[in-house]
Length: 296
Image: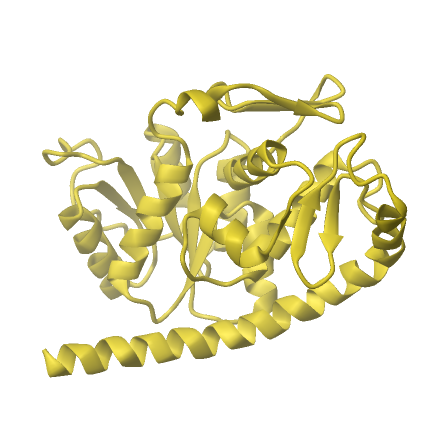
């Protein structure tokens, strides 16, 4: 499908510019709505109708964030995301017409920071864009958040956005970096998935499988044996906890380690259950918004 950008690729950004967003969707109606809402919210927006055009736009002028449809002609959103990520980190919000759990997990594991299932509220999408960009670190971190973090061979520099373990660099996505930084700031403390979503993602509601997938990916990068994690522990009935040397080295730690394999297996089931609950919740919220609009 032919590209039909809403504005010239290098058109001046509107006054109060908040960032440059690339919208990739082959449905002209959806694309026009998304572009319109983002423009009104103060973003400079470019548009592409397929994967190759999106990669061309991306290479010509790196956007601050990409809103990427999963089902694209010629090249699907997963491949587009992988190729963009090969050139460096960039926040990505995936759009998908399918509510399949596997698609959502694959999108997150490909490196997407968030996903939105069609049909969706354009206003909610704008809020997600704001949240992802805010968490991507626009601006200088506060003094407390800027100090280097270290423990168990891990070292993070929030200002440089660099991470390493035992001197070897870690290739972390933006969300993985933020999640690990948050856990390193609070070692030995257990956090529920809702709390992590609120503190790390900045969302008051959302699909909790997002947290589960990011914990699993993070374990794969920082643990010596991700199947039997010693750093990022699962706390039954609560959520997750980061243990540094000297913390959690008690009988309780042994009990958690023994249960880890079972926990990892059940997390996949949890993702499915949470996804089902989320879909019902989102439908209820949409109904509430419609009823409220009618009363207004």
